[in-house]
Image (cartoon, rainbow, N blue to C red; front, side, top):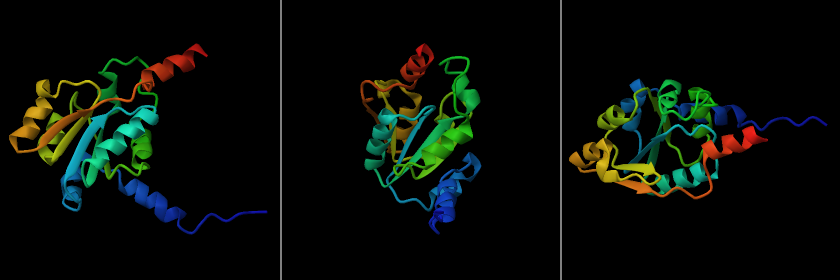
Length: 170
């Protein structure tokens, strides 16, 4: 018995790819988004439960969540290993766009998203892990125009690097 896919399939995929936005188009797209606007960034190489919980918490802080991914070149400079990221930037963007928590997904090629943050001026900057937010240049930029910056603790036991090690060890 052959099952036909639901009629909505094509529009679902179109909605998904519509969430992926090149940095050059970002400012034009941001005017459509409800505020407060939350911003976070990362590699998000192999998506796991810790990432999903973190992104859901970030999204809950505002009306829209923009996630900026490190490009492959930017991610390689983070020194997580010669073969990282395992998933290329467009594959990572596609997976990130599929999450209900994300409103827009973009990317940056620099070592930090400082330039991107300066352009889009999010209301809330969120980082994951044990960052000292007072020491981040991004925090200074956000606070200078009246925004807020905060760190959300990572969920213990979830790490892409640890997952990759476990897979390699078999």
